[in-house]
Length: 120
Image (cartoon, rainbow, N blue to C red; front, side, top):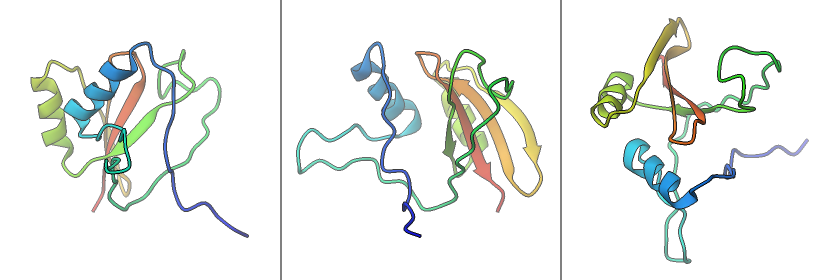
């Protein structure tokens, strides 16, 4: 069976796409989408990607949202400190032995985000 190689993009609607793209760049380090052939898109580091449908009544993330983005990070404490310094509220979640450490936040438009520092 042929398999996909990974996620090639994530496309979603936004009330102010330019401002939101800049928020992701400024606070999470995600490069803006190139506007020409010379530009470079965000290049992710290799690592696990979890593809997990949740039950419709999950309480793990916002009940009014149909998805949550999860981003792998190298140093969760440093990322939380960086975000909080910028005035962004972050909630730490319990560690999952064998899996890693997690924190939750939302982007300016209310999209739930999860930061994941995989266990070494």
